[in-house]
Image (cartoon, rainbow, N blue to C red; front, side):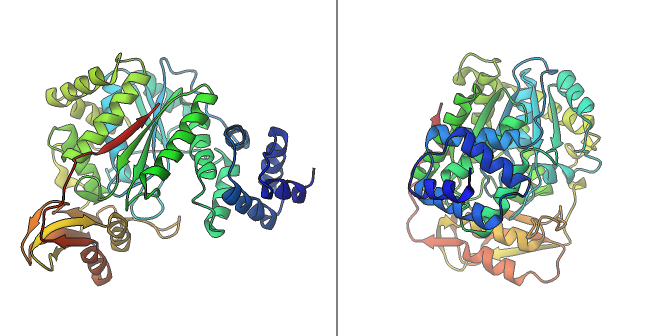
Length: 434
């Protein structure tokens, strides 16, 4: 086989065979195919797309390029979840103890964040002592004993995807549904899950800005999961404004605690409970979604959910007293109010701009080796539909940086105001694809 012939084949819109895909991924991973040829193929895929079988075979090639996690030592149906990323997305912190409380094993492998805030690993490391580097023996033991554990992703999980993603980032081919779907699903499947719930975000703070785009991606990922004998469900959830009220790391941990105590924001609580309910159904703990949702609400109301979160912190070496004393989480030196420029109703909040402001305050990374300030972030005081007067505080910045004017200006510009209260459907989950 010659790479130039395969590039030409895809340029003409023809499907690549499993053998051709394996040749491309295998040779590129070991450096035998140069970046310029892979870049040409990625652009051909961007414009010509891929068929269902092609995407599945690309996913398999990614999986087979590195290690695969063996979770066969864990009893029960292992259920994982994945979010395509949003602003204020602390859902994993909530669903891990909730789903584990129903007896469904959650063996979670997460990464660090790159962009507006940290990933799940970073958020949990805001808790003093919380350890995310467990041996595989410790990881399996925790899941069997407590039905939950979290660990950082192994370095050699889907190395082909890591290498190709870096190339996509500099060749303007990131926003290709086949490439996104294969990337996401390869990591989830290589992590050993039996069933997967996908949280596909839609809106200004999400990668997919429109419902149609999000639906196409969700359906593609569900098709991959099902074709590879993994039960897969995708939810399309709202990211037209930040989820909940907190954006950052330590402050997002605090908000996750509030949800587990029954005091959380309605949008965040609804999305988290919906995802957890589908995880419970796929894990065999409940016969249907409605039953699962009610059982999860009972866990919150009874105090069992927050007790499980305390246990989660303790088994990973963290200081669980932060649950009862959240003021012991990292605190920023400066708390800066951003004020409404005019009276009226909040008609929109550009979630992406809020995310950028959070990163400038120190809550995220511009480069993967940047250090995160766990105390940095924002509190969204006013959300879409809220009435404000000129001068009212609409959000609060938290930072240890003395210079924060740029972040403040960006946060202020993220808000739009109008004289009429916007129509709100209160719909946080748009669609479920099974």
